[in-house]
Image (cartoon, rainbow, N blue to C red; front, side, top):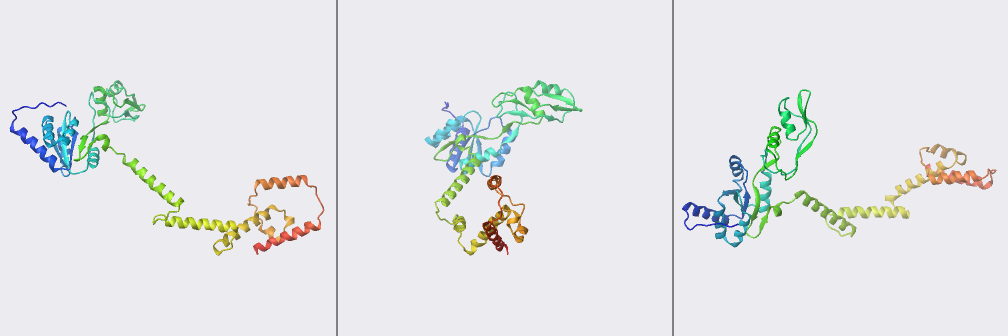
Length: 340
């Protein structure tokens, strides 16, 4: 940006430049913000809200250039972000906190004719507060499908009336305001900030905090899982490692059928379960009265076992009871001892 300077200057200009220089030296951060389109009343309100943490200074761009030039070469580079309606902010907040503060201070505002939509402007379907009248035609002329139903004006379908970046017509701007749809935002738009070492643009300062938080949570989880898998002991994972060791020890004892007090009850329950399955798999004439009484008809016999039993019964002819069969039955009767 080319800045023209005159040789003869009124005293107030030199005073303005001196104030800007002093503020640059006495504050940790100086930022360039756009104040385009902000009504004077709202601007004064913003200045009052920020007075405890930041000082807002409005000056001519030529005076800002001279002050930055006199403050040093590094500060002068910040002037590349000065254009149009500009204000300076002096603060001791770091640039990221300042950017977040300015973003949160923006307020909704009605659209003006010729402004470009900052995002898709969508009018939702449903009833309005308007009574039948000329506004039906106004809505339709603005591209909003409206009709009269049951004595009220309703919008028949949800419609995107303007897409991001498209200009807003005067007719549509008027209708949106009447519908109390305020698609614009009024606030101080930070263009760049200088902390004495680095010049940050708005792109640098715009951080998706939720995305960073999710990445942090994922990193902590991955680190914890890694420490468990490699059995690296820390104060944070020792409880989990001990639980893991206990579980693995219990599993090994069960598989090896080691008769220790901690696993004996489980082994007995497992043996009982297997015995009960066997009892339910055998016909009543192969069991004694005690085992027949213990039969559980709800026990599910594996399908493969049922199929094998059915095939054997089909292919095996009936035989008379032999001494071997009697011995097997008497042996089976001993299963009752498990349940005494």
